[in-house]
Image (cartoon, rainbow, N blue to C red; front, side, top):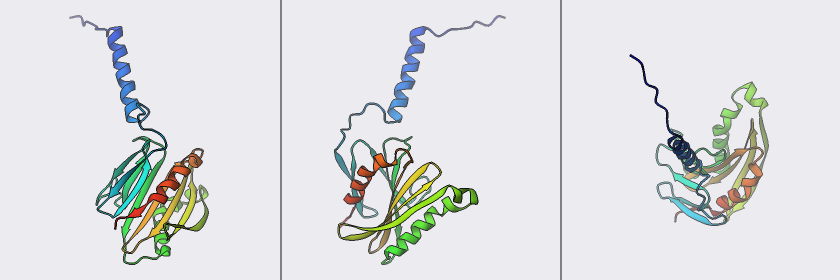
Length: 192
């Protein structure tokens, strides 16, 4: 018994390839870009009592009790697409009248994974803690690098919880995200 070999026609193969390329472009956020630059959208996490404005060119996802993929402290993720190299996280933890130093200590606990081995220590670098104010609330900023990624954490102490807003981006692209990140941080406000 001889087996017949079937060939796919040229138009069918072309249609298949175009379909895969369109799916890839949609998933990575490269097409269609109907979201205008310079405009902001507001997202509210009522469960954890905060709201932020973010550029409409990006997407945002709210998380509940179990957070993002088991990282239960992550309550909001802002990124350009599912597969993007940059991301902004809002981390949340309940606390009773925390001080800014307690939020900084919690941030150090979260970033300890970067300093857990000698090899990681050699690739980890902090650029200093700075203090600032947003909407009459004292905050602290910490910028650090681990391997080829840059991070900036914003520490906020509120009456019943602690918030850390983190920007994560490739080292070469980090500065291009700072203006939008600072606008997001400035827009962060509690629900009254």
